[in-house]
Length: 171
Length: 88
Image (cartoon, rainbow over all chains, first blue to last red; front, side):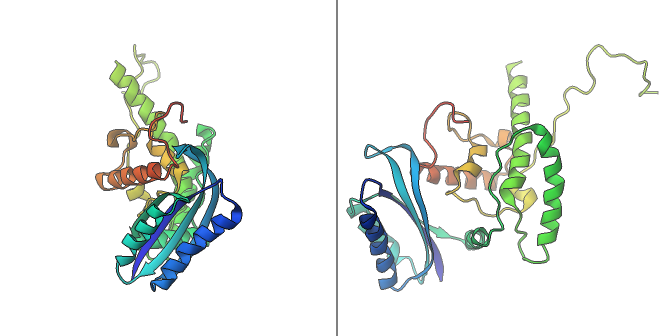
């Protein structure tokens, strides 16, 4: 079974019934072709980073499904291109790490990225998360670490490195 | 003899020490980079929305490529801009 992920953006000016109907159409298409829908994520209304079709917001959907082969992809892609209500779409194949990541995210094991407030906060973080990493190892074969928290800590050091190298290059 | 308190230097001897850069994905065992997470990917792009080079971000080649692919997918889905100013 191969795992795929479809993410698409629906026009936000439609009525909520039409939006749900759009989502339903593709769910039914997937099920009708024999795929097994693992998860449906309605990410809801979001601001777009740049205007698409002169619209500034869109409703994001993400379907995760598994199928025997990749024949469905071209069908879904074609249907979404023809559909005027769908503004953008993206179908990708998930490898085993992607599937694992999605499962962990739904189980709540992956924390959100914390906005770095000051450098003082970062000193406590790496040691705390190493403890977390060690704790998680016996439970799962691949260590499921609270990635973004840890990354936020490392990110605080990264800009410091960036400014150091930038100043060195200026000299 | 070297660490006497009364030795004075004209310039700080500690200058030039740099924190060791490492690949955060290798170090913390992160295998998958989610393209639907723009907050996480913000760490790898600069204020203009451009992807940071490997020598700045410290990523290994394998994960730098994954990051680049994730950022480009994110841009396609309009979660990150292609070109901007004052992103951060």
